[in-house]
Image (cartoon, rainbow, N blue to C red; front, side, top):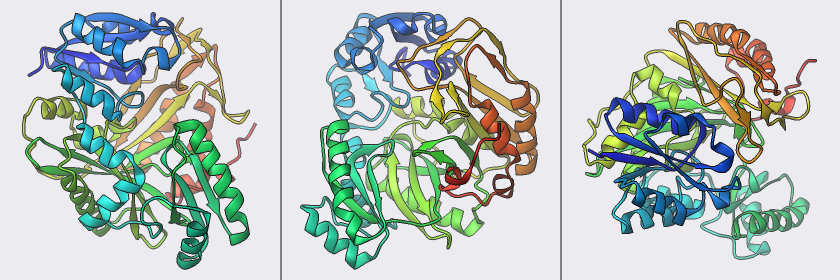
Length: 446
């Protein structure tokens, strides 16, 4: 087992990893930018190293500085958390070159799944259902138009190196195709330095359902059931739950088996997720594979009593997994609490937290790095807490969430707590009939 793990991340996920490491008697090293000097992950780690100024490119994305921090502190492993360098194959390879274990996927696995067109081909060969569309990247505009005509509109153009909704355009009819092609390529080129595009059939009324997987170094893989992440804004998740209210036992078995096929196809090592779009007829299609821990991993942990960070560390240390599939025994919901103003188009609202009261009680978990007096920097993602509720049934989990939200007091900055309070009362949400289009019709009440 590792003696020292450097955590190449910040905020709540860095704190989350520190907690598990302490329970495993593993020393921790925090890295931080000057903007995060007063952050809790710096305070609770055994050691801390400043790696640069506030901009991510100069600190949390600065590979030479992170490797130097690992070497001077004698870290034998690096946990990248999520975001930043967690799916960077170059970083994974550099860790290996320096004799430091990257707690995550190998460079080959990250490359195989990180490029969306390559991932789709890999899944096709593995027998995992994929969305009809182009075979790899589109060579030119005419090829895209021909394929769109063949599979039928609507279609969606996607950047092969994309993420967060960038480089993505829905095309409803042929005359809109060229303008969408030009704008998507331009956006992708600016954001990712790669304007390669592929095309898929656009799935109407979809649910975004992902399967949590784990695979060890010996080719064994299992799944830990599903999470429903359909409520999103601009392709960013707002709330997640497990089990999905749309799921049937038959569908869960089919999707779980497909996710294991996906993991086995790349001999996946670590924990990750296989993400699917599921249409209104409960036909599912592979969307992408995330080769890292997910933001919403706590809800899976709670319904199956399974520490996913501990499992990541054990897998990286060469310990085999059991190979058993896991199914939810409870219901859990996670609300992402962001420092944003939901009454003004979710505008970011960094600043100083003057008052904080965190909810508690039976069936409530809060993962957060904030405290009274903490200043939320403007440089990073606006998520400041994850509020999770757990209960015997979905209705009870929603009721507990309503109670917990009413207790959650954050003053000094605007947050999305009022949005989540209104969401819990929404009829479509309470019925579980929502799709990824939910936010298009949702309006905040003043």
